[in-house]
Image (cartoon, rainbow, N blue to C red; front, side, top):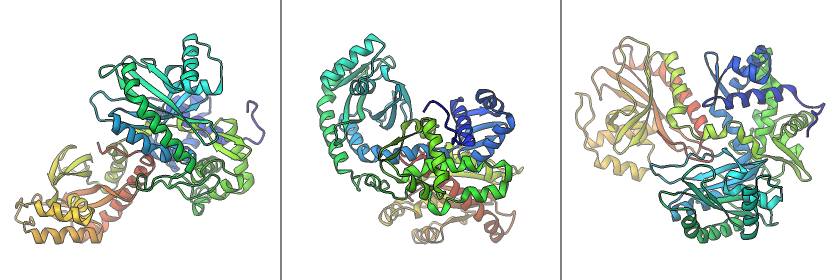
Length: 537
């Protein structure tokens, strides 16, 4: 659409404009005044939009700055779930990366560019910076020539036109340092059962290891085998359950609840928030985003009726949101229904896919410390120790002095006992069997039987408690932090002086706050880690 439809929802248009302006800022951060100038919106309008997007978890604020928040990942996740390509083809890309010991990417066409969907990386000092959601010019990468060869678009640049002709003749495209010096890649198209190209799979390398010709010689045969496996997976429409347990396939046109979708029972959340926040909350913006996220529960084209039901909205309301999203280029209407387009990934998905556990946890730790005024930390299990990956110091004069990167014995810490208790039983027994506790204070549990009982009790009650076992005068309370699959990946704690109040008073004040904060971190991990694991550091 070029002419603005009369049914377009203004707050949804303006809300997405604000979100795009924030995404365009360095690191997904922009001042309110900058956003107002870039969008041409009144400052008061930007404030209302920012309030709404902050309540929805799409943005967060630091003073007068707006920052992209992990909740925005749900928008891109809706596209990735709806198209189904990362779930169906990602395991094959990962297997190819393992086989060749080179990074492998999946990409789709997006207007005049190429949008990356998934990347199977290899651990090297010289690593590639491509992330899901990144957009590259079609003429500067191998997949671009494949897509142009398929759709027959004229290429203005003669060099690109020559690569397109070669891709059409050979069925393969090569990037010989087009996007960056030293970067080479070879790509093949992946076709659906009807013969249409749905994506490209490419193997990347660096000229320090091999040039473009050598990479093609190495990768082409395995690439062809992988493409055949991918096309078979597309024909079956099935996700290997042992490969991606959290990503169940949904047949085209059918619906299922997905983490990125809007549960039907939450569809009226906008109405509740409107009553609570009044004029500061833009309900029509919230409803439009609910419609967008509802695509995540439908594989393939989605019917208006299904999207309205999934978003918990009247059909007419959902239709106006869809008309707006079509006008903005995020949705296309096909004969079989509405299709979410990869442009949605441009709403910050590449920035969010680069977040680590400390990035996600730290804003929540700041909020927790402001509430309880004690130091708070997040740690992961590292061998038989815990390693601090995020920490915010409390505001009291006497506080615990620990820095990120500190390692402490897991057996004598509340977070360690939480993490040990979350291990599968066999692994827990093996860990505890090799740990030889030392008396760090007179109260440290040193007997293997007593330690096993303490870890088991921690797992059963759902929180860890250590009283002067690591250091005299130090009390610590911890809770688990699960990821989107329910697996405990970290622990969150608050540490304080043992003499400040009774143990019962500490638990009554701290445990509810810890559990609420852990839940917020877990929800962000689920959103950001839906299609790729979140690094712990």
